[in-house]
Image (cartoon, rainbow over all chains, first blue to last red; front, top):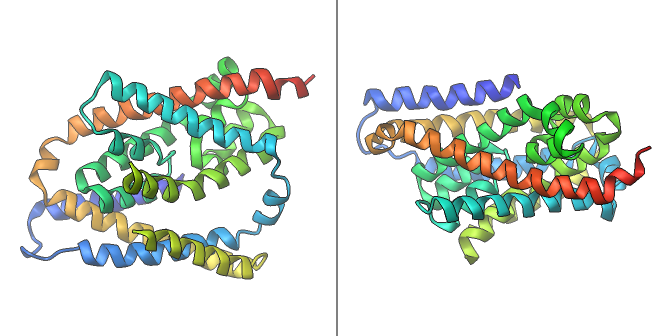
Length: 201
Length: 92
């Protein structure tokens, strides 16, 4: 949670500095951003692959447990399709891609900026931060009224780290493995689904 | 943009090679965070220097809230049925 706050502060600091117009015209961070994004992808892979919890998490994957992240993906798409039908101001591509951040706001914000521009990237960042915050605040209520998987699904990719403590408190320690597997699968799915949406749709 | 996925896979495979090494994990995990800080700072810079985005920030915020509510509602909806028909049986 502390690092989430720092991430947001860096974004806000960038906005403030960008607004002052102190930066000379014509400087483009786009190229630099792409290179740093490439480095980020390698490091996300490295830290994912070397995560000491990963072997045990992979060992406990079963078809039944995999149903949980699959359900989250289908449910999220369902919600986004309904949103798109009610409020058709965003294209289907952009709204599905933003939903496919599954709460992983730093990566989805940066990726969608590259695919679709700053406006959509900012929307993706804010929508996915909001997903994390709502999941943190409402985990107990979701668990009570919609079953013990509900706070995990709501948390999306964050169910393996930032929202894990509140999920375990709301749904019980028995849901530790499910929550970890769910987070791992969605974390790795985010870049693939976003890239596929912009390439294929 | 396939390069993004290829780099991710390459990183993951390299990470597997260091599987269980707490040192590699803690270094790369920390490095990842710093890179994210830098990228979000750059993203802020380019957002802040675009008046057309800054003017609409409130509108973007409201839209973001709506999208996240629909995304959460949809996934909670399917999670409810998954729990009710498959997962609840295992509990006493």
